[in-house]
Image 1 (spheres, rainbow, N blue to C red):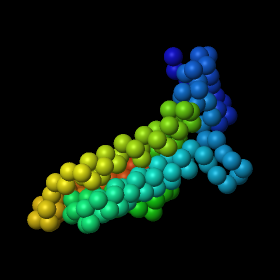
Image 2: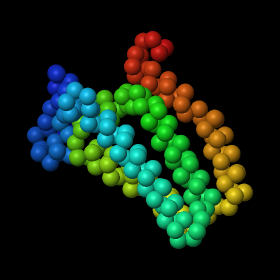
Image 3: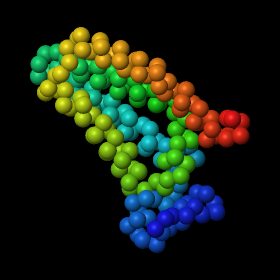
Length: 173
């Protein structure tokens, strides 16, 4: 049972099953006034910032229980913070992603953004609070591998190319 996009492109036509419509959402880009797109806001800020705050809380918990923060937890916090800051700095690129352009803003997307992202993405930090794994030598090697992997895949240029293609497929060629 699929939803069809109505002619005004603002609402997804109902599937006729109430629970499905609630779960998937009917409105494509709900707004609060003229200045706040609720779907973009929920997609980007509360979950990502919550993820960062929970990681910092894990570091604080480890510091209060052991008197120091291990290199492995510092490294996890640094890489996660790097990802979150990169996402926030490149906020306009989120506007061309599939969930912003095509999915309704229903319970599934709201729950995923507000609960699933911060509480599942912090699994590594929560584990490392009580089970530190990597010493300084391992952290140096891991940092080198992550940086080399980042350069090899060149994630930012791939995302920029995809964004340009989604904005205007003709000129992107």
